Image (cartoon, rainbow, N blue to C red; front, side):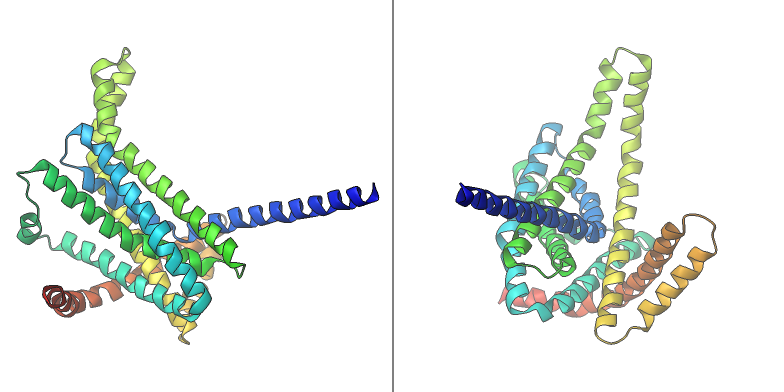
Length: 318
């Protein structure tokens, strides 16, 4: 009997350890996902554009195909790479984060530049055969999955960099949870966004009460400004996240002055208000990181368009 009680005690102890591990994994996944919030916002803002211009019945299937491609990107390709880096080359994580931050700065700054100096891009239009809807859908989905791969790489790298030191299996499960959680969040939100005008149109035509018909008309009218707002938020998020990654990378590599100055200015601004000091400090720090991101991104535009892009084009032809 005493042996059985000892066995039960051991099982209870193992169960407690397992429960604590689950709590740690869920908590780490939540924190890692929050760290990647800027990239998630941009992903959510960018993806609806890939489903525009198609028949309403094709919108959700297109989003579903992109979501499946995103999960494959994260779980089958990026997760193993992240774990290999964690085991064999952990020193590469910060440089990769910094490089990814530079890319986000470039993407965000390019959007700002194009908004300030808009121009027709005939080359992009020529890439799509708009005469064949099925062919166009294939190209759109393939382009979306490629873009998702870059954003997912940023998400997984940021998540990996924010994890505490732990066993490899815990890191693997945590990153898998982050991958699934963010994919569901992004593409669930995108599905709602792309169908909002259809839902509004349905309410406007068939709803029994006047206020619901008015709500439907409001939903239809709200779609263009909502998409424009999401695009602006996504651009700001890219610059903020990219800039913060550059500032953090510089601090790790020995240039700590920008990070310390930004923290000092954020605390100074927070102490100048009677309430909401944490929110003010965060907003000031994010704005300063965004300025860094914009400056760095604008500086990278000529490098990317005149040096890197031609090299990739030449490499692709060989």
